Amino acid sequence: MEIKRVDPFDTEAVAAWHAAWAAGAGAGREDPPIWTVPEITATLRDDNPDRSLIWNAFAAVEDGVVVGAADMQYPTKDNPTLVEMEIDVPPEHRGRGVGSALFEHLAAQAAELGRTNIMTSVNQPIGAPEVPGVAFATRHGFTRRNVELRRVLDLPVPASILDELAAEAEPHLGGYRVETWVGPCPDRYAEQYAHLKSLLMSQAPIGDMDYEPEVWNVERLRADEALTAKQDRTLLTAIAVAPDGSLAGHTQLAVPTHDPRTYQWDTLVLPKHRGHRLGLALKVANLRVLCENFPDRKTNLTWNAEQNGPMNAVNEKLGFRAVERLEEWQRS
Image 1 (tube, one colour):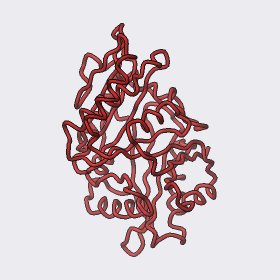
Image 2 (cartoon, helix red, strand yellow):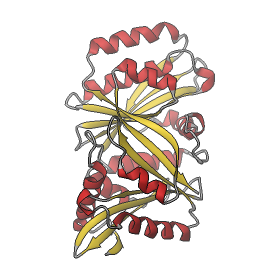
Image 3 (tube, rainbow, N blue to C red):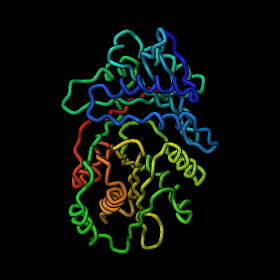
Image 4 (tube, rainbow, N blue to C red):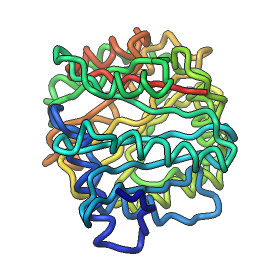
């Protein structure tokens, strides 16, 4: 068996890697959110000097067949010792050291970069027997640091439900207003919006994870938006504007071109602006844009920490159902 880095410009190699990755990552899960080949290809090829992450893919190859797939990503703007890894082995190739060989190879690569704080994740379907990833992570020295719930919302959300929830939030908004846009952030908000995105990891519950605050500026924001466009994804954003004109919170959805699923990304309301039902108002406004502009989409997926009571309450009110635990593991 040989471990090879995947050439992102070799379409056959990327497709073979993706097939093994999808088979391993999706085994035993309900509607697993697997990125498409175009999304992965754009990510691996990204060479924007302002990009915030560098991604590399690795394949375990035996007799010309990809028997295991892994990716390694590390931030360029912050968290200088951090690296995130995902290792996926199709069920028919498990139990003979493929995953361990991939991990040891990636760990050695990370060490050369000075990346000793290693994060990975394990997807555990609710109500199912413990998945093999738990034993694998434990065996390789990882500890569970945080748990998020993956929830699924069936689309489209009936307009009557969105109207009802908007009416529930409206009396609490006071002087706040909600604005939405499709695509890149308008220039007039770019600096404030980049700052807002920089606060997510310091404001959202992340359990015992060792993760430093992120560094965002307008250049990073634009690089992130450019990559999203190359991935054939459309961004839908809602912001809460405070009475003084500052941004009080936001929520963002990603809509892939080649996937019936849609993805809930960041949602954040700054502490001093909480208590005005802004989280509910933001999500309702953005879901309305989603349902009106993309009526053919089937589901919306979101992930939230188990301990994030206010956001979980909003999601349950909207009709999301929990299907899976995303366990975040770390080794340092």
